[in-house]
Every structure is written in C-alpha cells, then in structure tokens.
Image 1 (cartoon, each protein chain N blue to C red):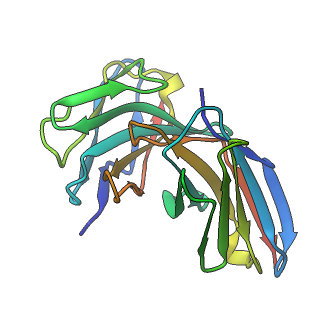
Image 2: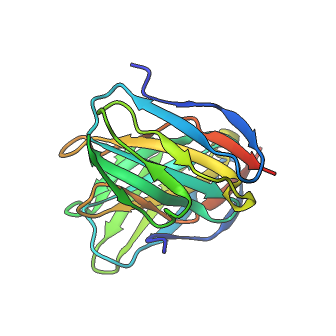
Amino acid sequence: NAGVTQTPKFQVLKTGQSMTLQCAQDMNHEYMSWYRQDPGMGLRLIHYSVGAGITDQGEVPNGYNVSRSTTEDFPLRLLSAAPSQTSVYFCASTGTGGRQTQYFGPGTRLLVL
Amino acid sequence: SQQGEEDPQALSIQEGENATMNCSYKTSINNLQWYRQNSGRGLVHLILIRSNEREKHSGRLRVTLDTSKKSSSLLITASRAADTASYFCATSGGSYIPTFGRGTSLIVHP
C-alpha cells in the first residue's frame, strides 16, 4: 500500500492564481481531511469528508473548496490564492470503528507571493 | 478553535531522562491520539487511547487518559536523541476527524 499520497510536494503561486492540491489514499478509508500547519499553530482542519459525495467545513475553510467523487481521492482547490494561504498542507485519512488511526500524507509546501 | 492544548510548549532534556508531555481538552471525546512530527516531515501516529481506557503502553511510550479531568499525558522513558521532534495530541469525537493541539517541541541532548 502507498498509504496517503500528496502532489505536488512544493508549489509557488502568485496572488490570485488558482491551483488544486491532490490527495489520494489506497486504504479504502471512509474519512479524509485536509489540514494546514503554520508555525506555532499546530494543525488546523480546513475541510473533511466522511465518504464519497459528502464534505463538510472544518475550522478554517474560507478560500478553499473540496469535492469527494471517489473514496480514494480528495482534492483541495484554492480558488484565488492569497499570501495568507502560505502554509504546509497535510491530507489525512481515517478508518472507522476499530481503524481510527489517522494516516498522513507527506505534505505540500505552498508559497503565495 | 483547537480542542487539545499541549503543555509544556517546549521541553529540553538529556539523553536517558524521561520526558512527560500533557494534553488538556475541552469537550467529550471518543479517543485521543498522540503523534510525532520530525522537522519538515509529516506526522507519524504513535498511540491511540479510547475514552474507556485509562492507560496504554507501546515500547518506551506510556499514555494515560483521565476523562474526568479532560487530560492526557505522554511519557517517553529513557529518551534518545532520535526522539527530538514535536509531539501533538489530537482528540476525536463523533466525526472521527481529529482536532489537534499546538504541540510540544522536545529536544533531547546527546
């Protein structure tokens, strides 16, 4: 199993540009989520999904969109990038019941100029 | 707002000493998890403790949970330089989506 994969690893954007951060998991996990990590802030939840076709907002959803058309994929879209979105983004997946351990991808470092 | 808060924010010890980190949270939980993050890397799951459990062990790690005080502690015994990392607690309620604290930065000096 590859676990949770994220692409790209690093991206530089100009203010106003849009982009999609990709996330995929091969563990057949129902739950997937996106976090951003800023210095001194720990991880903050952006959006999450409890299954294909179902998404919900987390703590800091503004400026981001998500969709979940398949169990495996959970892309995060930045519609119009802003310098405040400079951060490291982590995707994670979680099973349910006895499989509640959350698995993280390696992260995407985003710099918005 | 973040559910869990770790204490202390930073901890510096010598190799061989024990390291204790604490986590407090606000609302009821289904489980609490501890993660480690090495500088510039992703998070690695260390241990999960369910709300009906009081203590769990994994190798040199010992986690306790006191739901009446809404707190947990992570003890790393006989620490090594390789344990240098940030440690996060994360709590899950009904949604199974963990909410993280700001972390404890542990430095173990050789």
